[in-house]
Image 1 (spheres, rainbow, N blue to C red):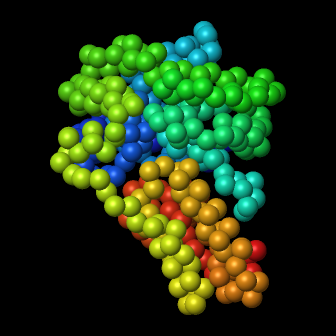
Image 2 (tube, one colour):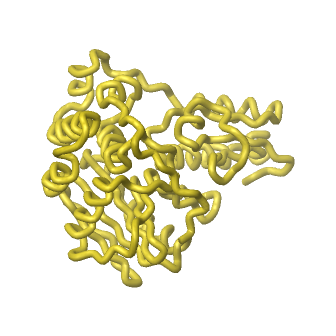
Length: 313
């Protein structure tokens, strides 16, 4: 198995209170539901992105039931590894890369799971891109993909080289969630109840739903790209490596920001000092050193800016 990470073990540690999580981070419905489901699957706190962990017994039961719902009877060979925000790096600097919400890994199989609660967040070619990158980085594994969404009309990705694809509606997994955690601990029951409530709110205004529960108004979003480009300019001047402290909702969002910065840099004047600055993703598990930002310490990933003697594009 191509992992490069040692399995973590967060079982037995308390799941974060769902209301506290709702007030602590500016998460959309999609990201909020993902974090609650992840904590239930692991039986503990939310992990760093792209870290390999073992699901709890209840989490393994849920995943196996979802696997059977997706592809029919499944033959599991041992306990798999579970990954939240599974990194599929770009093959070159001008490619975005990908990050399926979940991956389940065996020695011979990669099963990716993409979660959507908003039909508007469906992106054309996203799923096909996952297959392409997974085939490149995990060429020796069988690759499957489950797309878990509200009712949604779209063109499924083309099957290739024995890959399988399944489209599952959230309402189909409500019984699986109840079966896995309906008799769980108090912390699990709180997380399960809030997860089901949030999923049942699909189609309503998320900001109003969140405000009713945590008493905060709609957040004013910063111009993240503009702020990051200001840091690019500073790095071009003084050569100091910087980290953009952007609490991205998921790894895909951070990958999009990296590519957007690179495209802005590379479309500037040929003699611009900005062309010597490379935006890249630092990973706690593969890059070495320590995070330079609070978001990096929290997620294990951050967007870095480094200046090079020669132009990078």
